[in-house]
Every structure is written in structure tokens, then in C-alpha cells.
Length: 152
Image 1: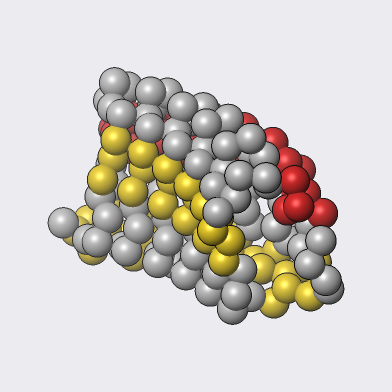
Image 2: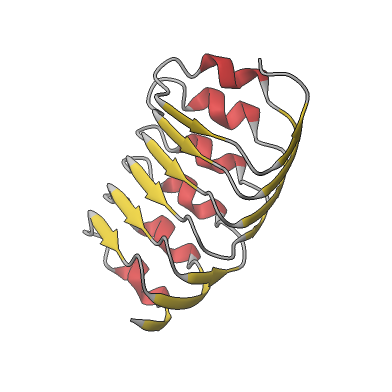
């Protein structure tokens, strides 16, 4: 598939899974994805998506698996992702993300998050102390960033 992810995807409010990975999709990640309140899984990895990670994804309270890896997304990791109270898997690796890892957002995911892939970005700053609160975390990848300091 090529082209863009249509904004009309937000009208498909009963969707539980969106699998559009490993295509040639370009353009921005539609903010309208935040309307898919029953969504469990979002797979947009391995495309040519640009722009930022939409803050509206924080409205996906039932989502357990969000994968935006291996695209060309820039900007910071939105703290609104901490509102995804069911999130278990978050893959944002291999993009062009910058800025700090949002510690308070991580703390909100402490009871559910078990996989966090943030490697191969340009994230900077120190590791947030909230990282130590992720008791159920099984997989953590932070390599190939500009992070500094000690591990909490």
C-alpha cells in the first residue's frame, strides 16, 4: 500500500485493530486515530510516516499495543501517551524523536507497560526516575540515543 493513512479512518469507531505495517505509507499519523476508542492494537510500523506522534493517541484508553517504529517521526514523545491506561507495548524506536523521555507519563503506565522500545532516536537528557517504577517491564531498549547520567 502507498499514499497516506486517510483521516476518515477516525470514522470507523468500532475498529479494534489497525494493521498497516510494512507498507509505503507516507504523510502524517492522523490525529483522528484518537477517535477509535475501542482500538486494542495500532500497527503503523515500517512505513514512511512523518510529522509528530499525535497527542490524540492518548485517548486510546483500551489500546494495549502501539507500534510506530521505523518511520520518520520527529518531535517529542507526547506526555498524553501516559493516559493509555491499558498500554502494554509501546514501540517508538527507529524514528527521529528528540527531547527527554516523559517521566510522569511513564509513571502513569507503571501497572501495565511491559515493553518499551525507544532505541535509535535522538532522545536526550537523563533517564527519568519513574523508569524504576515500571515493575512489570520485561523489555526496555534505550540504546542509540543521546541520553546521559545514571540508570535510576
